[in-house]
Image 1 (cartoon, rainbow, N blue to C red):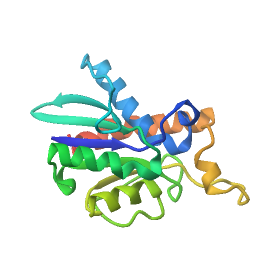
Image 2 (image 1 turned 180 degrees about the horizontal axis):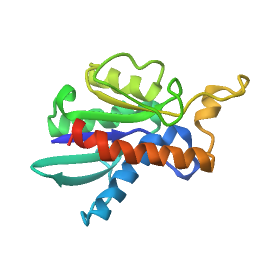
Image 3 (image 1 turned 90 degrees about the horizontal axis):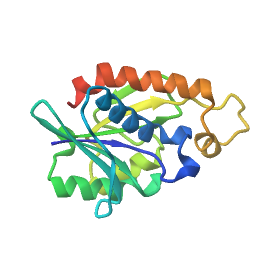
Image 4 (image 1 turned 135 degrees about the horizontal axis):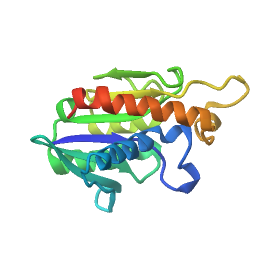
Length: 183
């Protein structure tokens, strides 16, 4: 089984914010599957504290996950899922999340390393006891105004032009990257 985690914060308040790029990616993957007549729906699974969607691609079972606890505690939900399915993080886990240190719309992929200050990723590293798992970092850039705090920046609603660019980035990732990397 492969597990793909999209990081974000639950609730309407955070739905279209920069910090929820991981959730946006999960939703776009489900939409892409629907276009291929593959029925996939997210359902709340309370034991994991996450919305999960199961699908089969080729011979591989894939679990798409949107933790439904706040970003900074994401590791709690991820650990429950990893333990339940007995997957090996460095082989079977991928985490998709926002990164302010990458220009808007760019993607970087790593197989291990520090959290670089991303609290959701640090929570996962802490809970799993390893930093060896695939991460897909989607750039949201930094605010042009240096007086804007990063904490405020990531929780701002995405302007339409940024949202469109991020959707295109996620579509490219689905078409070219995720299939190759994990599925």
